[in-house]
Length: 405
Ligand SMILES: *Cc1c(COP(=O)(O)O)cnc(C)c1O
Image (cartoon, rainbow, N blue to C red):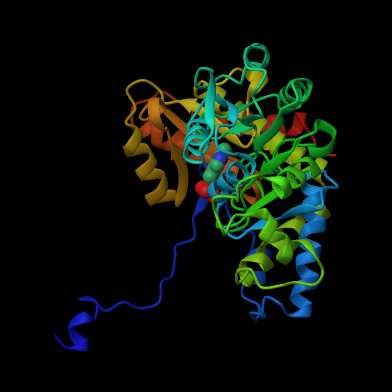
């Protein structure tokens, strides 16, 4: 063998991705301001200028989460690691954790509990339904020794929003700490960490924050950081131990922990600056308004939502695929002809449900109109009897009826 034998068999050159419209379950479209932030010069991760920017990220994240928690920062890894970080720090062997399961992400929480030596007590709700607070209350009564309640605020697999405020209130009454997954809800639906008394919360960069994937904003209450400091057994992960991370993200005198993904953090910084410029309430209202317009268009086509109106996520619209329509063929045509990506159904919903994301920068008027028009054309071609232009007209009427203040 020579060195030449290890060369790739085809000539590989620079990768130029096509310009898509991302309307799936995430990632969402990245705003050009965020993309250009990433292209700025790389700094050393202990450079004093970079450290100032990190402090700003912490402040901006406290705004996004509505918290004064000191321990609020970005994990250098995707949302799944934010999830794991909460469990690995907060569970000691044998600890009982009540986990709510109403979609794809609850079972991952159960996996986390068990892999970190805890005992999971599962509260099940049907796919497409929110977590039932009464069941949680009953379960905590039956298990007074439970230490943590964990649930997903916005279930991306089904498009359901659960009542985080009530669930956290129940947990407090039973002296449980809470772990809340807000990967899809942060910036898209109201989250009030301090007011609701959430102890550990994690999110992702690539959903309603419209940043490229790969970062996980997290925040921990003092209750959590005090507990982790006093743990009897060391955290079973070196990288995710928040005691060690405190030395890097926590204090102004930084010590090396790992090399921060500098350019990715510029992107997060820019997306958070954009969020603070827009204002949280405006962002929530924008997500709602675009959802209403998309829904109005779907109604003209007879497309039905999976989730009851009361619990629908504006940023993730899951709908039943009309009878006789070929799931894969529709998604392939939307991608090939309109460069439009939508999400397929997961698990029990595979082949039955489409998921239309309207997250972050993707949540905008042009996307709603493009999507409705494209879908109308494709479904008409596949034999559905649709009045051309009706969906767009309905969307415009919805926008007119819901002006943005
Ligand atoms: C996307 C998502 C995750 C996982 O985030 P990754 O960045 O893909 O690791 C976790 N929970 C929910 C609810 C999500 O939607």
